[in-house]
Length: 603
Image (cartoon, rainbow, N blue to C red; front, side, top):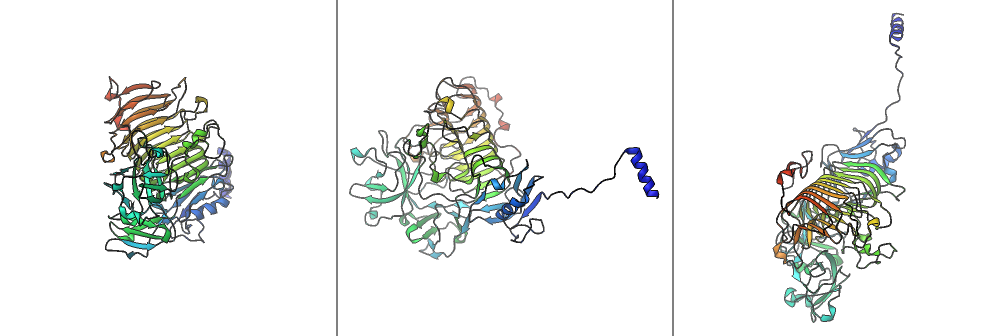
């Protein structure tokens, strides 16, 4: 009775109602562990065994999603034998997000796209060989990329040179793209009787136009006329009026003559390797893409997904590579600007370690990507509001981050991305031609800030469309670049800029709607051992319609050509290639990655 009376007094005085039981709050945290199993329920006590299992279980659990779901991936190595795919069925629902995060800190949960090679036997005193059950096109030892056995040998692990040079063997063959003529003294004579059909050529085709590299298997060699036959056409002819093309030969056993090199006998499924250390630490890729985020169409996008703190290591390359189609219309589809066929990657090469297509509101944060065969992160076609932030990308086969919009004049389908606080280190290891730390193509309304790109075969950052595209069909608008540091770029190429644009604003009036500010470019000096036949290196190169920009507070180090090359269609304020540069306006302490960057800076 007393308790009942006290309760009545409280109700009268405060108007407070007695609490009623509430529905149990839905679980927002789930767990994945290397010790999990198929019977797990995703709790901390009974975790799932893989990200794939978590994905599949959440498809049912999130139908009435009422909270942001976090999948806590515990520290450990998760081997990826098949690409982990996310579709619109895996999107966050009802305005909520699903995030897969490294539970024990950035880089602790590792997705490995490779497996150790075993069964090694001694081939000779230094070289081992083993049988394999799959083809792959790059190899790693103890977390370092191996070199495909090549001739001539590279001067160092950090450089691509030296090269051989093609010649004009017959005057009427100047325009050919499938026959590479060589100097007799450049090629081992024993090939005449014993040509290795596993051999490849890596070539900056185009002679002095060394803008792209092709990696192409060789079909044979003619030692009477001294030429190789390529199994696929190169992007350009091998000789022009100024020079032959730089190239080296690779993937034949006779070239395997130093530690860290390997040879793949595709016909017999055998790999030969000369280890730098232990043969037991050699791994070969299992996948080209580790994470695929792909909606089934632009109307059915994968969205509201996040990946935080995960480390992704090892992915594969391809059997042959050429940048784009050779001629306009080669894609086989009708386009308003068919010449864009020459700018876009061919379908067979549209992949990255992380590939994102038909997406919206995707967060890729605090990631560590390393040892990729091709692109690091590839955003292809219809993507909106993708964020790549606070991440380390190192030892990248081609571009670090590539954003590829659609064909000009056919819909503005990619943009409003945020790329911030990222350190991108060693770019273009397998595709030095056209390699960039960040490459944006036919995309606009993007924010790129607090970036470091260090050690690139060609560009630091590039923004490209085509010079034939009219302004109304050009989507590379309203991009902002700020607090950027580009170091050691152009290491294997000329006729380039550390910051580069191509065909961005091609007709008047040139609206100044792309902005660059607070950027420091270090020395841009290519490797003298490569004997570059093309024109020199530049800090900023606004190429073929590279107009519509404002530059403010820019500093460029030493170059072999101009610090700034542009048409008179951009606005420049306080840059050190012009008189009156005021270094006090440079915010050096804010340029590059911030103190929030979660990884040690690579040495």
